[in-house]
Amino acid sequence: MTRHIILNYAMTDKNIFKSVLTISLFLTTCFCGMLNSAQDKSVSAHYVLPDFEYGTVKMKNGHILEVRMDYNMLSEEMIFEKGSTRLAMDKIETIDTVYLVSRKFIPYEKYFLELLLEDRISLFIRHKRNILQAGSPAGYGGTTETGAAHSISYLAGSGNLYKLQLPSDYHVTDASQFWIKKDSTFFRIGTERQILDIFPEKSKEIKQFIRQNKINFRKEKDVTTLIDKCNELLL
Image (tube, rainbow, N blue to C red; front, side):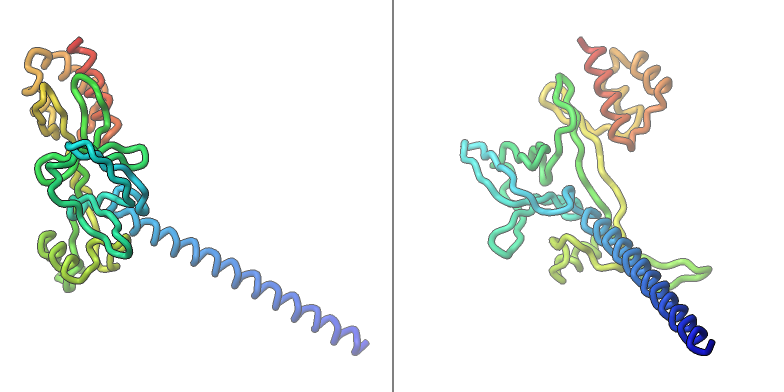
């Protein structure tokens, strides 16, 4: 009888050990998954791609360069790898086109625009992110925040600006802009009024389309649909 009781206790202890081990493994897996998710989020927070990829740089003089690169949306620079160092492309006015995976970028002023739609009226996006660093606790549970320009300067000085992951005390907000190219001229479109001014001859039809389709000028899919319609109207 005593042996049976001892055996039962032993089996119970063994089952408890298995349960604890199972729970421990489950929690570890969940934690790792959460950690990886957080890392993935930080990786893609300020670069267009989650990692550097080989791409092609076509120069205006006809030269072709093959490098690993990615587009930094904070500094608005095309960053490439040279050995173990990451550098920003300069003299971008000498660049014709950058082909990165399935994306196509062209230099415009001091930054790059990504081509979203190529047509009579072409659509581009200016990838841009603003960054803020959490400050000291303020009243009523709030926080004070430093300016984006100061934060970027600090990141650059600390060597973190070109890293794939940002320090945890920074957060990024989307400040991207949509641009169109009409007759070799670029126009920014962020409101209904802006696009109606660009196409006054079709303003009635465009305005109706915007209202009927509830176009959101912050959504890439909506803006692409709108520019498709503009091209159709201008045929």
